[in-house]
Image (cartoon, rainbow, N blue to C red; front, side, top):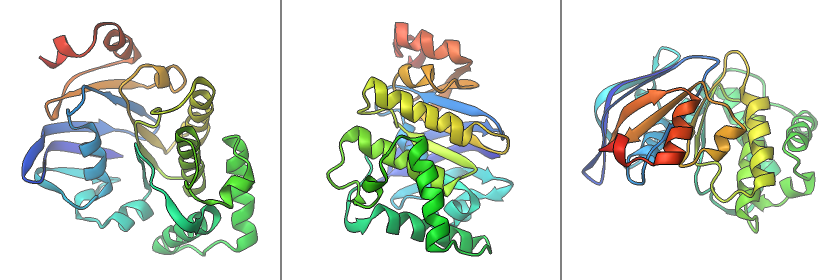
Length: 247
């Protein structure tokens, strides 16, 4: 599904990714862990197409197509979803309005018919219930007045409604208490642990992986993956830290 080969990228002319390679197949959940400044968020932004992140070498393909040659909206329509570490607030735009426009824009990009208001609300109620979010919150402005946990839960509802092929989740566990963490983990499993879908989880800690069991865990340090393994690698990192592996 996603194949990254020898990826190099800079931010403000500073090299961040320095030869990163990674393959994610359909049906797999991968976790990337690593110290601050290793390039984890940069990887997510490069894959999502955020301006200011320049690829200087290497390649990334998504379902066989050149991902780096696509505009951000084309990547989204192709089935890529990016969950942010710090979801932004959009005053004056309701969640319902935002999500319906986003979903229908993607459907039009794929040559599909847009959903009517009633059809969309049915989907929204289903996904909100899955993440234990009151529908009243979807009527509020996007993330305005939401706690950190509510913002992350709202983003999971967005993911459920968009229903992507590949979800890249950048520190989704940040700011979550134990109950919210369990709810978000259950949401990821229900929405994305299905044939034809895949997840790339970026996290500092083991705790999210207690709820979303990854197939593979990778350590990202100094702009490249330096070690890969199974779920036991995350527990090893939690116990011993990154110093020895990232040296």
